[in-house]
Image (cartoon, rainbow, N blue to C red; front, top):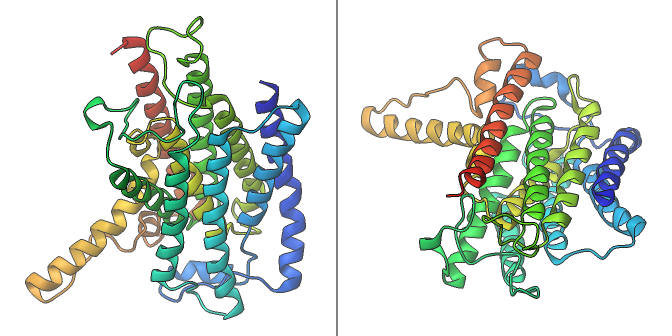
Length: 362
């Protein structure tokens, strides 16, 4: 447990102290957020707020993970390093997007095709590498199956191409989910604290009930690789987001930008994939599903009504969903607090389902 405690503490202190320095540096460089004209008018006051705070989160997590292993003199695992590769790779894509916005003084960064291409390349490399590195039980970080609470028996041994496409879908969904949720001060950061905290608990439980330790594991052991080290990564991510939230809460002194949202979404997908809880992510990350779903529903309904009636209509005043409530004149802090409550309920439900399956033994 020492490694987990060290990683969480170092990541928390890293963002808590490091973000203040980053704010000062970004202000000096003039790296401020540009606000889209088609967004809520209340956001115009945020113009110029330092962005790319995700760089601090990334640095804190990487230093915390490798620093905690150095302090405990233990070796990193293949699974943890792969999650950090995905985390960093998508963070680089997000950084390029943020940097283009700032350097060219426009609200849109990378072109959509370039952004998708970057995410896809990182996801493909991650998936192919994750199918390698079997341990002494021949268990690889990535299972060639689709999972809910464990691998689904009738969806195992899928072809490599299908597995890679499935991983690409999960990574795209999770990274864009966090990206869309990151629209109000503290909303994405606070939500990620809860979700990564949940995955830290899941990994610790899977470690205690791992099939690698048959003497202590129960009859429903988990066939996963490196759960303890994944818990180290998860708690580092939760701690980094928690420390960043001190500066990102309303009124935000800094934004995480796409650098933060894409990297955190990628790490979230990696956690779900390696813990064999891919479909459970729909419940644990229920708030992200709502945010993404609102955009899909809004776009589909707009196009459908335009085709059928000639007059396009909207289901919501604006999407993602939190903007709908802004236009209903809800205070930003009220929206964030209530969305955090919703996120917490989803996380609690997901953990409850995960534990109930083990207790029931079915």
